[in-house]
Length: 243
Ligand SMILES: C[S@@+](CC[C@H](N)C(=O)[O-])C[C@H]1O[C@@H](n2cnc3c(N)ncnc32)[C@H](O)[C@@H]1O
Image (cartoon, rainbow, N blue to C red; front, side):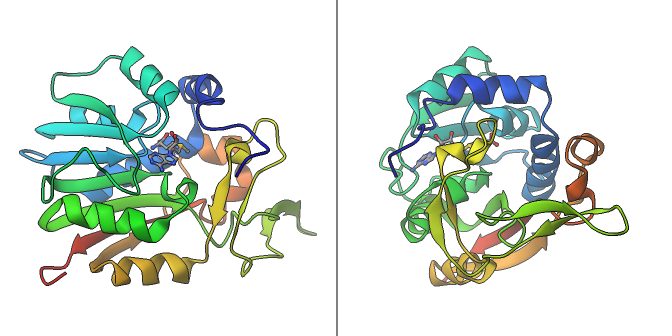
């Protein structure tokens, strides 16, 4: 996973991208909050929180306590710089272990645009399952595995409409975007949709609701190709009582 920038290397750039107004984030955040549902009285862990965009929104939406977790100190420094209500704190930890947290601590875990960036999906889901209370919910939004594959391109069809060209869906691998302005230059683990869903059930989660959110107005303006196909796949899964 070397030969390219780390998340810490691009932390300043990432913060500026979000501050300038990111259509993908606007779309993802609305979806994360929708899937989390009622937050009053809840303890929430926001996994792979980066500069805290979702953590802050979850705290503002009424969660009792929110902990934003990320493995990049630079991302967390930016998160703290944005300020936070008393109900929100940040912790540096690895999503694949969550060593700082006891079993059955949280009512909900969110992970917005993070699972594709973490190498061991299985270990991450085991850790999320462990820190959730019985019947707790896990909400995640990922780059759509069917349309954001490593070699996917946007092409214009004969009718003038933009669409995605997907030559390599089945080839699961770690890759880096060569686009100097691409988030995925920090690396991305391409997995099929079936791999995500099967790992979820192997980790004793039950899928409750799935979404392929439509592009927000800003996203449709910034990247018109995602007006016609979903940029994200999202789901809410429950910790199975017997798991
Ligand atoms: C695309 S970014 C940001 C996602 C953020 N939730 C958002 O919506 O802006 C992915 C984040 O995952 C973090 N990350 C990558 N591997 C991680 C790991 N093993 N444990 C915790 N965080 C990790 C990176 O440091 C980075 O901040």
